[in-house]
Image 1 (tube, helix red, strand yellow):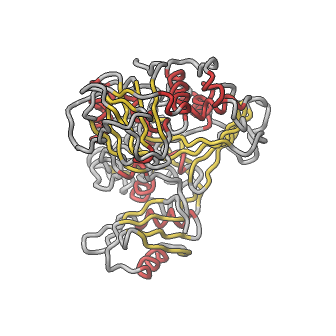
Image 2: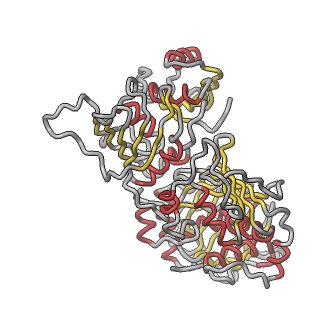
Image 3: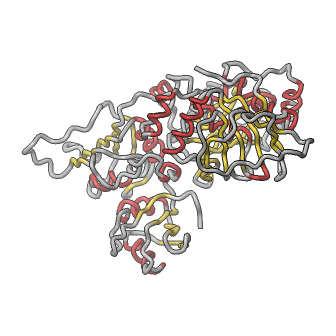
Length: 516
C-alpha cells in the first residue's frame, strides 16, 4: 500500500485572490508570495491531458486542508497541495499519474462532495506543483500528522511547528459530528479510530438535531489535538460518514452506564443502566474484526476505486453479516410486507420480506447487503410502529426463501428484487447523502405545482396524526411537514411514500434532519 511521504510540501494562503503561480519550466507550477511577475492564469478549461496535478474548484469557503487532502488519499500518495482560499480552489498533486487518472475517473462517476457541497475535479494543465512551504505552517503540520497516521505511527513530536500547534489544545474532550451517515457508526468504531492517537478514556454518543454526535475524552489534551488535526474532515468509510471534530467546552465526562451509548473505559464495573441495552458482544466482535476502518486513510487500489465507481463499494471493516434482519414485536393486525419494505427502504434496498406464518408478529427482511442491514437496524431498533416498539436484530438466515411454487402463504412473503422504488440502486444517488434517523419532520419531494399546503396537510392528517407545521421550499417542488410524534411520521411515511398525486407525480417521503 502506498502512503503519504513525510516530506510533503504544503503551500497555502488564506483569503487572497491574487495569489500568484509562477512557472519555472513548461511542466511545473510554483507558488511564491513575493515575486509578482509572470502571473499564471488558474486554468478553467474543462479538459486537459492526464496529469498527476489536479485542479479542484468550487470548494466551500470554510474548507479545511484535511478535507481537500482526504479527497486524494484513497487513491494513492499525495505529494503536494496548494490551497487558494480566496478563489475557493485548490491544486492537489498525487504521486503518480495513474493514481490521478483513477481519482478523476472515480469522481466522474460519483460526484465528490465537501461539506455536502458538490466540487469539481479536473486535470491541471501542469505536470508538477512546486510550492513555498512557508506560506502556511499549520497546513504542513496537518499533513505531517496525517502522514504519520498513514504510515502507522504517531505525529512526530520533534517537529517544532507541530509542537506549537499541539501545545494549544484547550481540552482532552472532543465533540464529534458525523455527516452523511450512510453506514452505522458505533461507540466501538469511534474508540477504534481515535485510540490510534492516545488513550481513549470515555465516550458518550447521542442524537441531536437528528444528527449522530459523540463526546470523546482522551487522557491528555495533546492527544485530542493530534486526533482533531488528522481526522477532521476524513471519511470513516469510503465516500460517507464524514467526521466533523472540534473541542468541547467540557474538560471531563461523567459517564453513568457502560452500554452501547456510553462507556467509561476506566470503570468497567459500571452497570448497563435500567432499560439501557448492553452492548451485544456479537456486534462488538463484528466491528472489531478489522482495524482498518478509515477508508480515507487506507488507500484504495485502482480496482477498488473502479468498483466504487460502478456502485459496488463496501465499507472497510465489513462485518460479514448476511444482510437479513429479524424484526419482532410487530403489530400483526396492521403490518404488511409492503409497509416493512417502505420503512426499511429508507435505509437500504429491501429485496424480500417474509412475515412468519406461525409467528405473525415477526418478519424477516433481506437487504441488499450487510451494511444496509446494519444501518436499518441502528436506526429502527426500538422505534414505535403501529403502536408497538419493534425489535430489529441480525438474523442467522443467509437469505429469505420464497414459498414453493403453488403454495399459498396468504401474501406473507413478497419479492421486491425488481421494485422501481429502491432508493439506492443508482450509484452516486443523492439519497446516499440524505439518510437520517426517524424524526417527526418529514421531507416531501416531487410535489405537483397545483397541490397546495392545505391538500398536503389534509392528506397527512388522514394518514392518522396531527400536522403541527408545514413549509414549502425549492419553489414548490419540496416541503417539510412536521407530525406531532415520530410514530405518526413513521406511519405517514409508510402510507404515503410513492402516493400518486396525479399528473404522473408520485410523492417521495423521507425523514428530515431539519425542524420547522
